[in-house]
Amino acid sequence: MERMDQRSSAAHCPGRPTLIRMKRDALILTRGVIVMAVAMLIMLAAELGVDLSNGGYSLAGLSHLSVAEARHLTNGFNRSFNQLVGVAFTTIAIAVPLTANMYSLKFLELIIKDRIIAAILVLVVFANLNNLWVMYALKDDFVPVISIHISLVLAIFTFALLFPYLYYIFRFLHPNTLLERLGDEIVDDLQRAARQPGRAGRHRREVSDSIEHIANIAIRSIDRADRNTAIECIHTLERVALAYWAIKGDFDSKWFDAEPSLFLGFSSKAIFEIDESRSWMEMKLFLQFRHVMSAAVPKMHDLVSTVAKTLRRLGIHEAAQRDVALRELVVEYFNTFIRMAIVRKDTRAVFSLFDQYRAYAESLNNEAPELVQEIAFYFEYYGQVAREGGLTFIVESVAHDLGVLVQHAYQNNTANRNKLLDRFLQYDRLAKIPLPGVKKAQAILASYLMAAGRSEEAALIRQSFAGLEPKMVGALKDDLLHIKREKYWEINERRINMDYVPGDQREQLKQFFEGLKSAGNA
Image 1 (tube, one colour):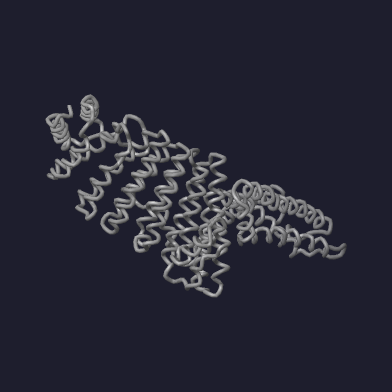
Image 2: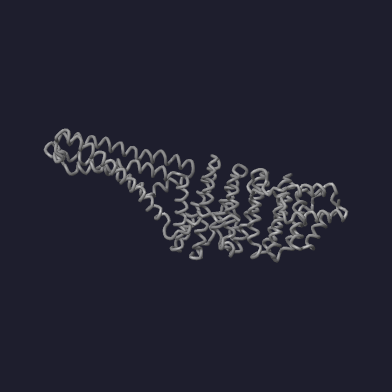
């Protein structure tokens, strides 16, 4: 079983995530400015020292300026500050709208809210304004020496600020950075909502809008084949869910009111059910997974796998395990995704989804055996849907997944093991001609049951082989015993060969087929 993604731990950071990130970014920017300023001062001081030494001019004489010298210097400052203002604002005016157009208009709001960028822009404008004020104060009989030296200091500081500022902007506009800030903003809104019950409606809408923005970024990334950004969107939604569950108990009852405006495509009855189950937030999050899946199938299989893994991880989280409504919601979304992939005949997506669905069912076997039996029915149901759609590979792979689920139940001696076996034996029962892959899955399970000393259960599987053509039974035996490589000979998401039989079961498999032969099947 895959470990929990470590990146989700960021959601549990105490305090205000946005403020923490801003302090860190401000520290990085300040360090860069100091380094640049010191480096510039050292080079300028060295250059000036050489000139003063060669010219025999005193350092004290530099502080005295004539009116002509002052005007020439302030004019130079004026040109420099104008260029700095142009660079500072042009960078924002060009780079930010382009990024917002590519991903989400929410980024414009994030830029406006960023205090570091605002402080730098104010500083550059002030430096320019200060120099204009010096030019105004400069007269034929008066030189504001101190103000001119302040302009010089501001010029050095703002030029030292230029490269760290551009680095900060371009780093800020990186999709992953923007997603982190969006996620932090949602967490901030959640924390404020928990502290301010009277403003629950406002915070609820803000959280909902930000969650939708993340999904929109993922969808736009899919259109541009930006795989990494789309996957990071799913991880961000996961972090939001974990952060929400960490403080869900702190919310007032008003927070859980499901507003119809947040679920425009849902009926009034569906809204009522969401309201009753206090699960509008989870429904909103999972609904974004659905939108992303709709765009990803069949374009981006890595993203499909990421969504499936994320849904499974959230499903096995303690908060979801305690809540019956959330468990059912996870199952419903797995079913929705599988239906979507089957309709679009994306076998690879279905293959990945069932792998995670089966793993999720295994995690529920001890705590919710009845729900696992229900999931087994869905396995059978969607296997039949796949057969009707001509997707025979899916029918066979689902049979193997169902067989593995039954084996897991017997390994852990769960209460639903016999009912799961009955469901497995009914799988593909409507087929006029059983598929070889389905019968292989049953034979593999039978070999495990025989090795585990469960001869009665193995006998039930043997009965399901009654009436098969001897030629087909012989082919099944040859295929299964011929495969000795556990990994499939091509790269796939699971990295397994479904027809592989472990060494300790191979002898039992032979005995199973010998029993069929003696019974007259071969």
